[in-house]
Image (cartoon, rainbow, N blue to C red):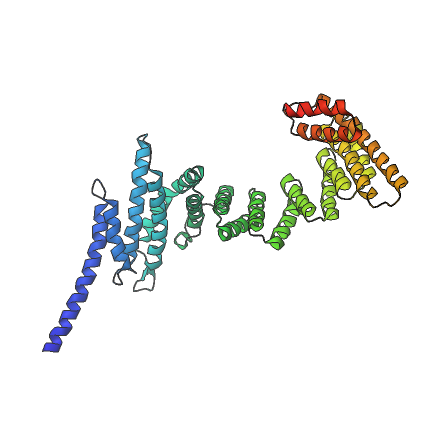
Amino acid sequence: MKKSLLWLGIVMMSSTAVFAQKANVSKASNMLYQEPVDYAKAQEYIEMAKMDSTTAKEAKTWYVAGRIGYSMVNAEVNKMYLNQQPDNEAMYKGLDMMYSNYVQADKYDGVLDKKGNVKYKERNKIKADFKEMLDYYLKSGLTMYELHDYAKAYVMWNEYTLIAKLDMFAGDKKPVVEDSTYNQIKYFAAMSASLNEQNEDAIRLSKEVIAANCKESGNAYEVLTNVYKAQNDTVNYLVTLQEAVAKYPENPYFVGTIVNYYVMEEKTEEALKYIDQEIARNPSNVDYAVVKAELLSRQMQKFDEARAALQQILDKDATNEKAMYVMASTFTSEGDYIQEKAQDLTSNAAYEKEMARSLEKYKEALKYYEPLRATMAADNELRESVLQVMRGIYLRLGNTEKYQEVNAELQAM
């Protein structure tokens, strides 16, 4: 008899615990219909139910948790309808609660009927809520991005893209069509993840956008290369950059970036290969021809070849400031190069001859620097550099008057 009573007591205690947690779910649900809603208390009730083994795997528990988030979002949406300022944090929190809890609710939802068909209790309500609030994931993401809260911007935009993949929408009209807008939002999510140094998320999303071969694929390559660079992953950085250049040869960012990479690695021949491809593709763009001349001069000491390339530009446009600047620099670079090599000479006569030859190169440089100085705008970014080089040349030439004149101009800047 005592054993029977003990068993009955245990059963009663267990039943009481079950009823208590189910009551917490009901309390949390009912509070959403009481004004003003005490969201903190509602969450307290539902969190107790989520942690208790008797209700932790029930779809309704998680549905109500998600519904609390829905109610929070709806309250902020109503403010907007009344031309009131919504609480951005409450909007974000509610949307995130909707997604995380509704996904879990759907995981536990669905039971087999007598015919072996799966019947859902919460799924249709969840789908309706997602469809109703979908656009606010986009708006909340944009708000958080503008506030420079990239972590939250990523969450909102990423959840928007994930909603399209949810099993609950299989065989149904999806609320998110995987079109250009969808890929654009996925790119925004990748960019936000990158800015928040969530590198693995940024890599995953960028690769998905690239694989979609859409309008945003080029931008996704940019995010991906930047992430690899930040991680010092030279192998993937270069492979991705080469792939991007091959796919988007007209994109100056990728061509310029890979040229800079090879220049920094002192692989000038590789850099020139990409520059020549760009010149051949777009011969009217003189910028790459100027860059090529600069590399030939500074990195390879092929001064005559560099000047020949620049002269082709100046024959068509005698006032091209970039070409004139680099043309002048080929002479100063050659003058410096001659002086450097002269240091190894053991014959004084040979040394003096080379030093005199270097001075002639500096004089040639002035033939381009002086016109630049006369015509270049005061706010031109190259002006200070031109004046500094000219001051050095006049000092070497012993032209005190010109040195002081240029120096005074520099001091006045």
